[in-house]
Length: 105
Ligand SMILES: N[C@@H](CCC(=O)N[C@@H](CS)C(=O)NCC(=O)O)C(=O)O
Image (tube, rainbow, N blue to C red; front, side):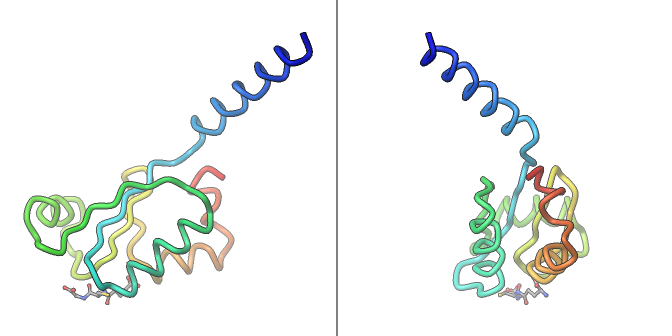
């Protein structure tokens, strides 16, 4: 009985967490220090994100430019489809104490 109740509780929390979790996407290139720095910050938060490696250009790069026409550098980070900029911008949001709310944490 007790075990059953505990399981139900866990399931509800998991569902709630994923409902609040933001969609995070990051366009990166290989050997990009700023990309590494951005990923490390996101990893430290334990959030899941989708990474598009555009080292070779192609469709991923075209898509990034379509979403953010003035993008000249990587990483380019999107949270819930809103461009938040690059690694410095991500770090600035963290320093300002605004990143967790954006990430739904
Ligand atoms: N201020 C930017 C700097 C990003 C940056 O300079 N990225 C380099 C790669 S590490 C870049 O995109 N260089 C131009 C290129 O690779 O086409 C940020 O914080 O994201």
